[in-house]
Image 1 (cartoon, protein in one colour):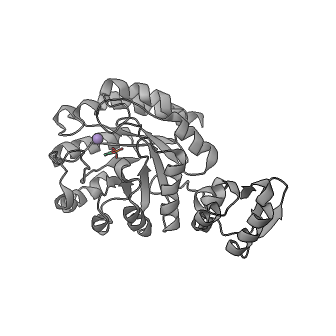
Image 2 (cartoon, rainbow, N blue to C red):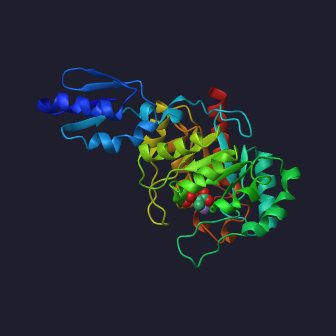
Length: 321
Ligand code: PEP
Ligand code: MN
């Protein structure tokens, strides 16, 4: 960490810093004071006091000093999903009809996917929309586990529901709206389950990493990040490829692209797939045998034929690795 003081106040700043950072080494480097030997992460708690010292002009904290877990953890894993090659999470937007879900899941299994979307809890922007089967769907969904025999990926909205889904979802999704729901992040992390964390629209790389840090700090060992674009309504297609590139450059945590919620219409899904697959570790995509019957996101869900094209292309990438 570097602290830039006003020239005339440097000695006073040094004195004040010594009171706050009792165990750290402070070195005068001319126009800045170098701080070493402090507890990474916890330095965040000292920053307001340091900022408040009269004569402090600027503080520079490196990401790895602020986010020690995110920058030191290698999160690539083999189970429940092999994240060492490009992987696919596919399935319905929401399970509203178990028959359609079952037929879709069997088709996807036959074609070959790494995990199935099994959403029972849906966050809705308006309180009038279908919110999924919720807790009522858990037992029924469990009945399909043996036959489908693929990891189930499902979002949880309420920390009180986390425990209830532990033996039905192999991967717990934290949706875009909840990226900053800290009680939920903690609760899910403590289960030690694999977590899929989606980026909240318009949030920065740093904010995304802050939420990742929560998960890792509270016990998660396996995390998949997911970029899903900057718009939550059904209006504007967008995906932030730079976030994917930056994550790949900065840390060792898999990141996938949600090519459905970013594309927003099925005719755009392929385009968004092509844009992102080169950089991302995998994709999430909404697929159904009867897309037109889905009560949510009907116009963006692709059918099996369209999905086949995506699958073939992902396979090609994996052959090249
Ligand atoms: C979803 O993936 O089911 C979903 C609701 O997406 P998001 O949280 O990205 O809006
Ligand atoms: Mn959806």
